[in-house]
Length: 347
Image 1: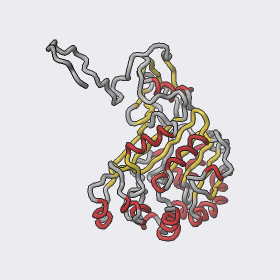
Image 2: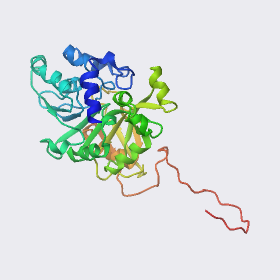
Image 3: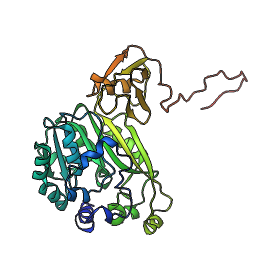
């Protein structure tokens, strides 16, 4: 699969227009405040970009970021502007042709930004242990429509867990399927290169994340993918694909369910790009100044991450009130007494 991907992205594709689907390339949801960053990036870097929008969480100044599958460097150079001179962005990619584009224009971006804060490394995202990257050395790890291309996704997740600092996060976009992909489609080089047949069944991704000690994966946003190429659509049949962004926090105390401890937070409105509302994920839009009840996991994600200074925290975990209402998990037992019938009840 490494050979397939390297050939597809290094030789078959010469620009974004060569892609046959929109699975790996969509900028429709890009925030307005991010678009000016692209104006500072070299045209060739932009033209060789194959990712899903721009993967960019809030509050990056001074952060150390790792970009898995950095390609021609577009996201690295965008993030470099947001972390500033005191931060650093490292890009890892296995495709020589893509890395050559990224490195060729490094001096151009140093002149444009006024500082040098990026590094590009040749390597495989399943073999990050082979690179000189210290454990617990990154605040944030990002990836843009690349994990699906990896033949060993469990190794990727394990390395991400190792490289993140406590309280750090893995924030990434990728393609997911509504079912497991059959092997004959996985073996199709075009479907694989187009970020489709390497996609995980979404439930398997949740299992994989939890297996790597990311106990509570949070879905940030998602959209269905329409396969407009008739030949590829015919091969895929009824499988449905989705582009989705997840955030996974490295916080040891997170539980595998949303538990209610009677806690709440108040967002101060102090993050520049989000003065009125902070969106932690798809289901947590936290309005500034308002007491917002949260489960124990959400409380910890905010309190033990870089977001802590921007919130007030109410309560602790000394009392437990059961599962947190509205978190998609219900107690399975009947909560009303059954009438006496004299009959035994089997499970």
